Image (tube, rainbow, N blue to C red):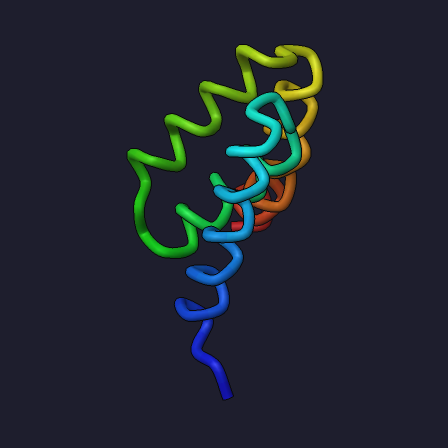
Length: 78
């Protein structure tokens, strides 16, 4: 059984390869930011989130709101 860090590390490499081929592929930046976050590499995650914001600010804003929705619900329940 693979540990979550190994899985995210492998996925991170896939996302990075995709971005070498197409440096404007929004989804790979978002997915790689998520992998960085899961691996505890917060600064790199933020850098990728900044990149997606520059690529498509409207879509990036929607994803950030969607990603934070469960956190807001948890905060209200407490």
